[in-house]
Image 1 (cartoon, rainbow, N blue to C red):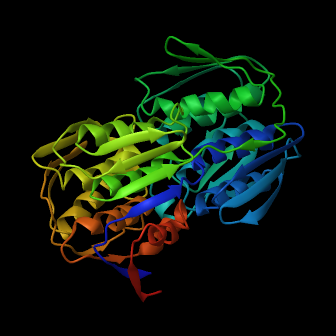
Image 2 (image 1 turned 45 degrees about the vertical axis):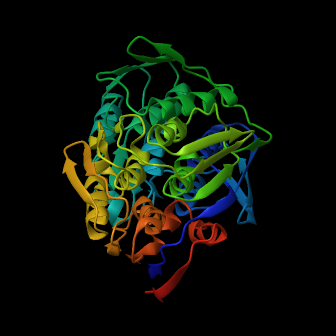
Amino acid sequence: MDINIQNTKLCGEIRAISAKSDVHRFLIAAALAHGRSKISFTTLSADISATVGVLRTLGAEITVCGGDGDYTATVLGARPVPQDCVLDAGECGTTARLCLPVAAALTDGFTMAGKAGLAARPFADLCTAMQSGGADCSSDRLPIRVRGRLTAGDYTIRGDVSSQYISGLLFALPLLGGDSRIHLSTPLASAGYVDMTLDTLSRFGVTVEKAADGYFVPGGQTYRPVAAYAAEGDWSNAAFWLCAGALGGDICVRGLHLASRQRDRVISELLQAAGADVSFAGDGVRVRGGALHAINVDGRDVPDLCPVLACVLACADGESKISGSARLRLKESDRIASTTALLCALGGEVTPTPDGFILHGKSILPGGVCDAANDHRIAMCAAVLACRTAGGVRLLGAQAVNKSYPTFFYDFQKLGGTYSVITNG
């Protein structure tokens, strides 16, 4: 779908959608639990649907009821697992990375598959770790055929490639007969997401101990069902609205836990540091535009924030730098390249670096035509940035938002945004 987005300021109040990182983790743990668990959440995105599909193929009975804004998933876990099944992760890297080790702990043989975009992304470090534990992987890219079941023992893996590799192992290893250890050969990046995994495991009665260089995981544990749970609000997606406020609007996002394990909550501090007016009330964060100025950002623990932060800083006075984010090149798109392409297409001044961006701010960008690069975050960036363009934005491939936030443009209109559809193709 290609759309024209007008240069309208966004104002008003909106409720954060549920954090898909929280929903993914609950669903996986619930599928491993002996009994029935239930979670309520707001948004059934393509990514969450991919995890539901994989867990159903692994034998879990999952019923999803409701509609936009109010979904409930009931999970009956610890069911028989079919042999030689094909697990389709669609375009969701989270589904594939978390479920690869889990499936290898449950069955002697399966194939993890996915769509072309996900198949282009490497899984080498996770596959190497799994092979050291007895699960042979046919390739380091999807489709990956796995033969042999994981065994208890020592697992060594890099901590700076994907925190989801560590989370996947943390879900799987408690199921094994003996104790295991995860040794991190490099410092852990995006540690907040692993902390979320540890919180989920604890919620389901599973114990993991932090060690000097990783984690100690006692074996032979049993996941206990959770009768009812409401997913957290998503700081990562809320960041787009908060950034829209910083770009000259006035937006309050409700339903956010200010003490959340989600590291992306730091967006409020970063916007305040850049000159935006940020205030807090209960579960709400309000951001209003201010005189934006340059800042330097270390994106090591918050890579998902970097594209939209780059859009804000492209409109801030002075030279800003975002660094520490080389992993952006391994996302749905090469987000260093696609964010650079977006900003250049709209008249921004940005220089890509190996691990981020150098941005020379302009108060108003000319606007123009840009491509979402089949990446949900790039599509949302374009919509948010339109308010600081002279001529608006023509966005190609706007349907990319369905991956994580299918109601994005509905909420965009609720906040006063306007757009028109050019083609639904």
